[in-house]
Length: 79
Image (cartoon, rainbow, N blue to C red; front, side, top):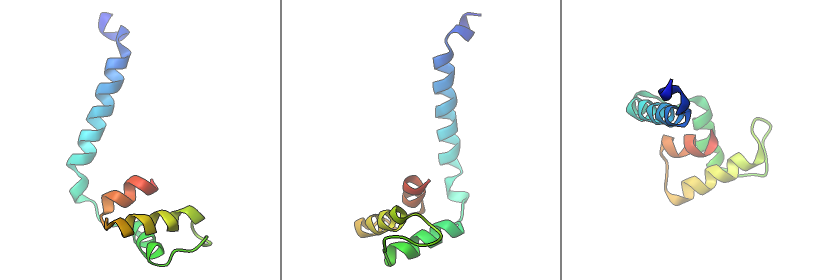
């Protein structure tokens, strides 16, 4: 019963385990059509498109101007 009282430890341990699993299998993922759309929107930024909110194209433009064409950078900002 003493272990169950320390629930914050288990929550942090589960969150850390989740991050480790995601980083371990990150290389197996391919581009999703949304990420390809964000790459394209970053090349042609506008105040809005019918398929995405207006901020997405601006964020994609900022990411690409910094030089990050990585999938991880787009997933971190847009998800």
